Amino acid sequence: MKELINKLKVPSTSSLVLYYASSIYDTNLEKEFMNRFDFGNIEEFVKQMSDSYPNLDKILLFRKLYVRKILKRIYKEKSYPQVLSLGAGWDPLSLHLVEQYSSQVQDVFEVDLAAMVEKEALLKRILPDCDFLHFMEGDVTDPEKLITSLALSGYKSAVPTVVIFEGLIHYITDGVFRSILKHFKTPDKRNVFILDFILSDESVSSASLKQHQKCIQVVSKYVEGEINMYTRLEMIAVIEELGGEVFSIESMRDIELEVDQKNKLFPEDGDGVQEVLAFYL
Image (tube, rainbow, N blue to C red):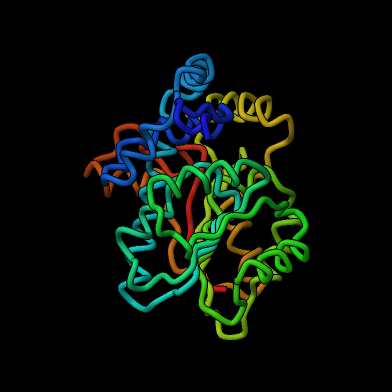
């Protein structure tokens, strides 16, 4: 396929996340994946986002680090044979799973509205023996149809599964989010969800509120829709109401302190636009 020989150009929001998180993609497979992309088309978007929220690069990086930290933690405790990435985009998470947890992960399912055919073709060039990777173009706002499509692709609801719900909840309604959780709820809480959520204004420190609102405005413009936001207590309440058990929740302040051993960019909880959490369901 000629388009995969040249550098790939993908939507601005997808490129931005890859661009900002590029430092964690440090294995040979991940580097080969990243070398396939053309980031020249996002210069204006990067500038706009940097102007509206100068620390956005760190936020997106910390989000990715958190996902990997939780994966490391849960796979030390037990095996989760299935991984499901909803709103997978172009993130090379599958390559990370291959290199770190190949003995514990049997199937990886990646779902997004578009570009999964192209992503599958690219990953098959990098990793020809990847029959355990499954790519689907589907709409998460229709959970019943999603579950049916997953089953046809080999997904087994009885198997313990890690569900990556990164960078997605902001763009769906609270009702859709609750419906998704209901469809993945299990009686023995055998599934794990990892997700991030954008803080509503009342959770943000007064020093950061203006920048926070400006950042939300810019993102809303690019996704052409409203952004779904929560307080920490609201998010925990939704999860617990639907039978989930939160076992980790961190602010950008928490992650910065862990990574850099000091708080320079995010001195208060509520700084950093987002929080991240993981829960059994």
